[in-house]
Image (cartoon, rainbow, N blue to C red; front, side, top):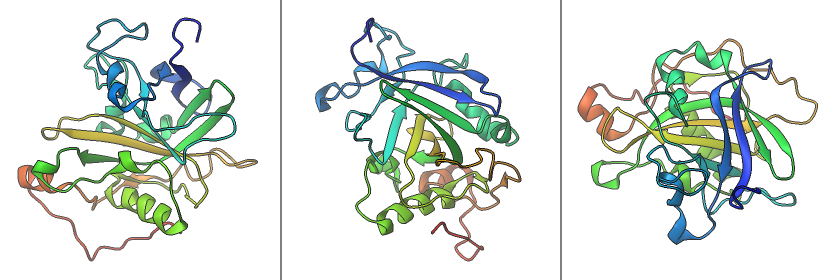
Length: 236
């Protein structure tokens, strides 16, 4: 905070022992819409830098008495693995999930650990087809809204995990660019570990999803389709 008053927290992606794999960064935030992309090409100290800085969505609340239902955190997919570059390991090697299933978020007020329950490829351009607006799910007004959203993630997730998700869980989504098509995004979503919960519960026994729901533009490029009749076991 002394170096940058926009600092709101710190993020690590970790294994069971608390060891992290590159993602170990401060989180900054601008809270005005016209500045929402300020850190896309600025260093932590606000200087021009193509790697940018890990930043929280301008609409999010991360205070002691109030936290958004889902925090959206953005970072570049750098070729050298910097920023959110290592997130691509989740889709490149499905065993990576069980090695690094946790996201630790330190705010200026507290520390919470989240366990990843899904990750998916998204389209960010309405001009090319359907868009799953994960980035607009900041707060949920009802359990119906919540379950519609998390089941949307489960349908799209490249991996099937045994982590349960319940209404009232706080979520965090890590969003980065992806390479499947123009304006593609790769998103990793986790939910906060509950009080007195075994943090490893549900982590093991994950498997590749044989039928993830992909954006329209993906099928146009890569072929294939989504099987609407395949078995789907929803949260809730």
